[in-house]
Length: 597
Image 1: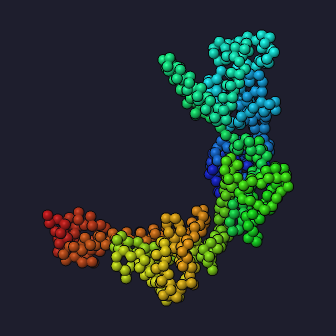
Image 2: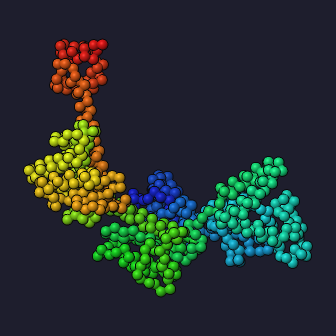
């Protein structure tokens, strides 16, 4: 397995979608669909026993591409379209003329309704495609159970019916047909049923539902409860088996879609080519930023280049934002709602997944470059004069002012540096005063660093809002460090970033790597502080109980806890054990204290 391919396999998304394998000559080998792309693709390379044909294909793979869709059904449709469009060598079983089924209302007198895989331009109405035959059959059976539609292949032209060429068949006698071949059913009545059936197929069940409810009521009034129950079941089937959707609305035809996401170093553009309501081409590319170009500038370049690459002649383009450029005879839309908005969101999702995959690959293959990119992003977003290579986070922990501690955690290049963590036992504050406690901890921390000549951090992160931040700033001003170190606060409720002397907080994107690092520092300082506060509170509680024993001091308490590990075991110990640990005199005193009654 090639190194590049191995790297791709590690960063695949777990969404439903389609995957494509390419050989060294960039020839498409295979297109497949998956409910979970990562599991499905990895299964090819994890199995020891596979067929000769599969081993041959795997040996030729040097690169793969993926397209994320909303559901496995959409992946199935997209896979079919891509196979028909590209005819990959190893998809030989799909190279016949078969396609997904459609429900057709035939363009003829007294139209028939049936399933077909072949679309013929004869004026007939085609609905679908359906990813599987069974749902289409169930829908068709539901329609035929509600309405009696002819199934014969007879040419029911008006002149042939009037000449009396046909006789009713068995379907009429078993009440599956109402005999239009002998004019036992009028054309108007039959067409009314066809109109209601169109509604069912399109998802409009109003006419059919009213019809069934009337029938059910009639049966119930005539005490024909079995027939009424049968109609009720048909109503349920009507609700359960509605016509399924295609990847895109069938009315969306001959459209190009461009989705985009970007960061400080690059933009990622996804392109969908839409034909007859289906995605027949999917392509995603990374465009490096050279001169801090805007998204609009990059999109203009990408749009022209990609359309030329795929020789697109589409007269309509969907984009996530407006452009100043105009393309002759082409309309550019920025959809705000509906099916076009949903397909644009799917394109943007593919661009975002592609970016995540690329960033994961960089993190694995070049961690230094990954770190440099994040540090540069943090410097820009947090308005810092230097990259935050050294971050220190602070949090206080106490319960109603008891056993208060201040925690300091240290991150270097975005990673926890635990050997530099520090805990501060609050000395000058009485009661639950977070602001004063923060002021003390910051002062003690940086006064000592200055005295010992240690390197100061580029960023200080305070867990809390404006109050805690203001208290920390006071200490920095006393030490002459304010303005030399960037200091910010982060409030948990809305993840607001506060800056000194700035009343308006900064809100970072929830997916921002800068925010994730700040959250990690904040959460780590909270965890570290709570851990030591609990330990201190527990020790305080234990010692206070043993300190009540007359004649027992701190050294005796420590000796007991070192040997027996807990107050409970001290209480349960017999006098012989206690005398062995402490001697006869003190052992007897401890035993008497817990067992006097």
